Image 1 (spheres, rainbow, N blue to C red):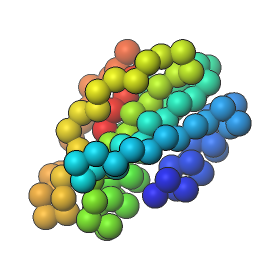
Image 2 (tube, rainbow, N blue to C red):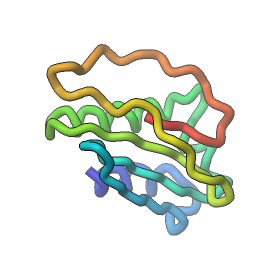
Image 3 (cartoon, rainbow, N blue to C red):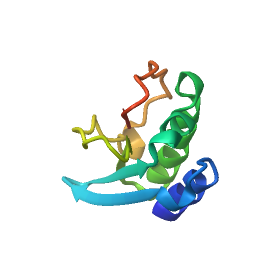
Image 4 (tube, rainbow, N blue to C red):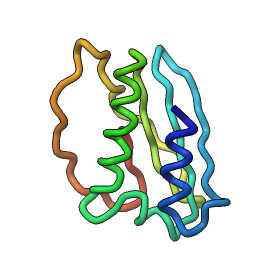
Length: 110
C-alpha cells in the first residue's frame, strides 16, 4: 500500500525528493504520515480537498481489499504531527463515501 501512495504523491508534487512517508501500526490501524515540501501541501490537498479525497479513496479501496484499517495524515515540512481521526472501517462496516469539508490547507487526515 505504501508503494501505491508514494507513486501517486511523487507524481503530484513539484518536489518529489521531499516526499516522506512514515508508517506506524497502532491498535490494528496502519497510520501513514506524509511529509511534503511546504510548497506542495496545496497540491496534495487540491481545490476543495478533491485531490486528498481521491488519495483517500484509493487507500480506502486497497485497505478494504486487504481487510485492514488505514489513516493518512498530510503535513508540510515545518508542521508538527497531529492526532489522526477515526480509522477506515473494516470491509463489512464500510459506509458509502462521504463529503469532507475543506481544510485549512495544513493538515488532512483520513
